[in-house]
Image (cartoon, rainbow, N blue to C red; front, side):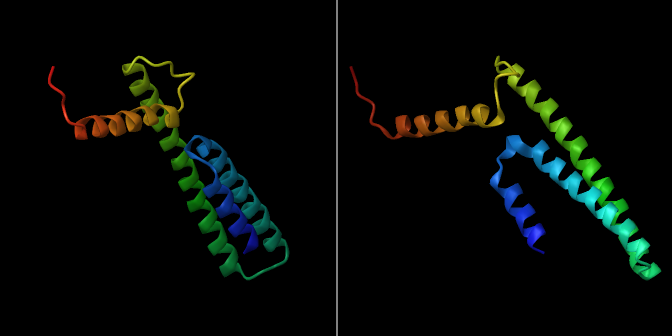
Length: 119
């Protein structure tokens, strides 16, 4: 249980740009789970628990692969948007890109609330 809590804290401490890192952690845990299930089989646990574990692992593997493909398509779409706004896709991170919009909105609200001086 402590390992799962540590894993959860590690994933939550990273930002969105570390999503591939988080997926790699999930992949490592999936491999550890497979190894553990094989060791459980060697220890001659009941066939019901082994069947359940194999079923879980096969479903978790599909979910992890789905996350990898969703991440790849999101990165591709992000690069298209960055190029649309004339930025370099290699130098611009998602945090930097969206902070531009955040700064603009803050400055716009400040400017909108200030009274207009007539000349």
